[in-house]
Amino acid sequence: MIIHLLTCLALTAVTLSVFSWYVLSEERTS
Image 1 (tube, rainbow, N blue to C red):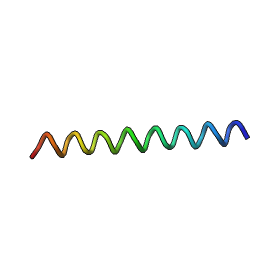
Image 2: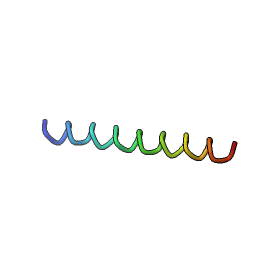
Image 3: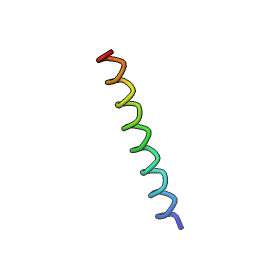
Image 4: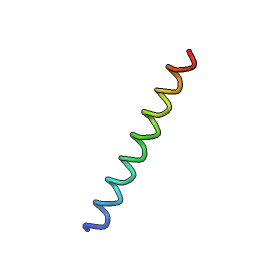
């Protein structure tokens, strides 16, 4: 159960990191 929770948290963190990086690079190019 704890492993499942950690996996969900890890996926959420990675998704947010990729999303924020994408937004920053989009703003930088425009």
